Image (cartoon, rainbow, N blue to C red):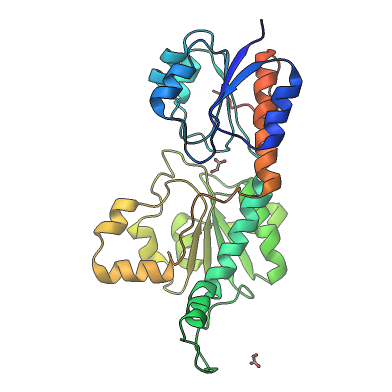
Length: 307
Ligand code: GLV
Ligand code: GLV
């Protein structure tokens, strides 16, 4: 009999097609994209499966792995992030883990540029003014923003995505790229001619600060009140990473400093859509499906997490 697989979401069609046409697995699917599979249902459905294809709304922890039982050998997540996975528990059970880096780099970089221009040129405020009658006449400094031309762009966490962002911003005549990371990354930095600086300097010098690092114990809540207090009050802060913003600290700040942070840093909040282009979500779906099938055959996955 074929290996049994549970798919925790109605994933984009390319991945489902690969699973269907492989003839290699029998799979069951949580047949909705609007809500995640309820936990109880998930714990039932994973019983005895050989493989699991999940998305980032499923917590893959000891309880779930216990419910699945010893047949489970392969987990494939349709995400680049993996904070929903208990890596230790997976490792302990010898379960291999696939994920989907690289295929979403372009989409995330494009969204970052979109956010950057939207905030720097105050497009949300401007459309609001236009719709609500605030646009009376042309005014000399009304809705002025800041240009990328001659600016310093800071990158917190220089990886594939940081490089892709800088490559897209360079044609806007950025003066200088600076970055920080746990250590200098000369090979990546040389692609975009970026200078390594401390986190402090990054905060102080950046006109635009873009955060595109992985969530690790070191980066968790790295962007806190202390960091914001070092930034120029005109600078623009763009984050596409997970949980790097210190939520508590923002909320407990006094009204004045909170206002500053919101105005200078947090003028736009989006849902979790950085990788949301049709081509990228399908590529993630296909990669997740292929990782799963390769893993079940005992072959190296295309993108496998080292546990
Ligand atoms: C998006 O946040 C992802 O992890 O794929
Ligand atoms: C803008 O349209 C200008 O003429 O300054």
